[in-house]
Image (cartoon, rainbow, N blue to C red; front, side, top):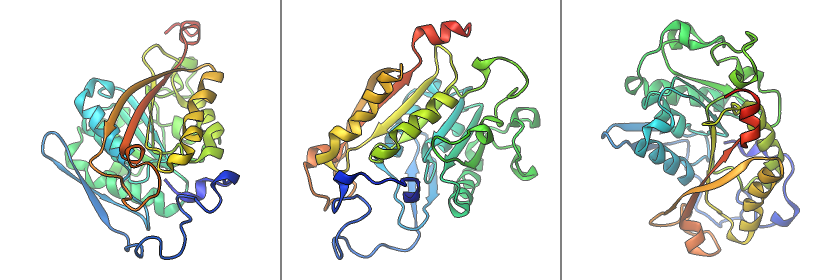
Length: 285
């Protein structure tokens, strides 16, 4: 999840932006590093991080949510937005997702890092046939992987990611031109991008009864929590059915020196967006 994706900062965030702390507010940022995630099966996933990026709590929580109920992703197509290290996508692929596309801002270093993390978890993935690899441009050595990395700007044409779906562009109908599962982990603090995020959800979420977009986040600036939650008001206005599906209290805040209500800083909530019945009934799902 690259900070440059947010091109229009909120005026209310002045002097209190998550990525614009006063000098010496935190210790110096360490060089590029790695973090790990241990699966329920005991496998360790090593994740390389670019620059000052973090393995956000939302990514850990949604990955664990998938592990607790593998049927949410097994045999399904998955698209992750603003993925950063791509942990939820890697876990979904390891659990048997049919096709996973992990995306972030189309910066070469970010995309290369997502590929690095996906390739590093190769031993956890079931292999896929060439026919199941979709029509996207993927290096020969990576065609056996169930996961691919792409750059994607929220709100822009998603054709580059949709082409990785089976049958995309073959005239199979609108319900085939989307993913079964979307993941948005710790993105909602980008308030000015809510509209673009939802535009991408509308363009990429398959119009079917069982399709879901998982939106998992912490309000890292508690005094702006109402702005985070405004995403769901906008989603409802655009016709989505919104449901809260999980809440997890972490042992401590991700950034222990952050100002604001500590209980809010420790809390991760998960929500699901679905198409209303009249939409998926209209496409015969």
